[in-house]
Image 1: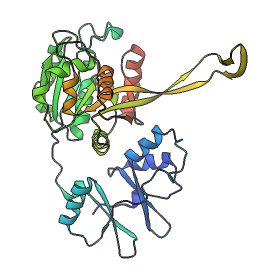
Image 2 (image 1 turned 180 degrees about the vertical axis):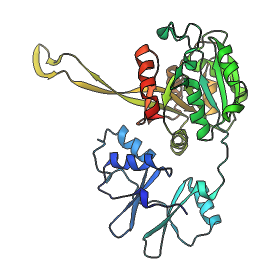
Image 3 (image 1 turned 45 degrees about the vertical axis):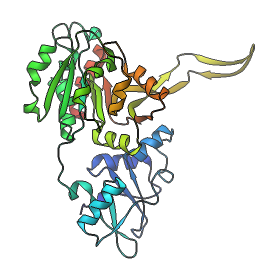
Image 4 (image 1 turned 60 degrees about the vertical axis):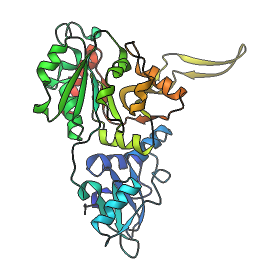
Length: 350
């Protein structure tokens, strides 16, 4: 039974306070209780991301965010019964209560079963030319540039392996030998790495048409650009995809753009309002995805095809396409300024 005192929150706690509690621990959940330790509900990473997508302020109360009728079990339930409950309800945490409904424990799936390597494949797109980072990329592919004393791609691989995702395919192109010579079969990084070589540029989705034989029929797979640094919890991402019964999940990052001028609203020739240097908020594509295997059927063979075009097709086919908002650290290293920023921040982040 897992300890739980460090993940207790009140119903008037703020979203930002709960984020800190969840991120500081390993259980990926917080338990909402009253002053008498009666369980009021639970709140997890997915609940918080939905609140962010709904534009709730991080200073907002969790009152309308947490799950008020969570699945619970009696403290005297057997391990077999708890395992069955996790399987049937597709949950990872079961608060344990006594006869009075008071919280007395927490059972987690990780404790109930031995954690094994996961089957879901990780596809890393590492064939870009890195034009904007020249001359650094003249001899070195962008994903192999050193940030924090190691290649960007090594950090990505190590992050996936830490969550149990060890089956990795690298789609290579420019200077592919540098990537292969460094990672070999992946064994020294605790992974199984294989390679696909693009003889021509195929875009962020085109190369997936070459991978059908490597993808398990029933298992969603990750796709990620090889020039990103992030501390996203990949296990949470997969859970979010599965729990929402999605066909395709795109990670998105909130982006603020400040218009450097006063913006004028007009009705014909009449000025109706003036807004001085407004800030507009957008969600942008973060270059990390989870796809179900049937999405590969939508990709034309041997053609340039990007991921946004694939999502367009997914939507037109009426497959379920969802967004996963990234609230963690994320940086797309495409320019010299971002490369310098990554090196400056690396030790504090990772």
